[in-house]
Length: 103
Image 1 (cartoon, rainbow, N blue to C red):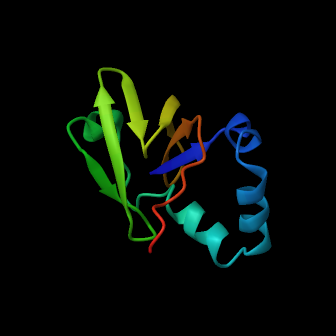
Image 2: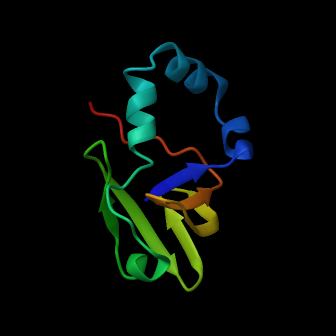
């Protein structure tokens, strides 16, 4: 399952954060991308009642379902759901999610 930010979500990302991620493709960028992937194909019905999901990077991703509305992370909203691809279910989200920082 992939929670993929829209182009607008990337456009709204803080420039300093984007620059830092692009400058460190094997560190911060990989961590951010892994936070958007759950290593299991999940439908909207599967998400109902779940409060968090383990991401590819090992972080727990908060999730909240309210009827047809799905919120992931602290603020990302699903704007298009359940796009079926060959090997994943994709949900388009309106915000680039940043994993919790250690420390």
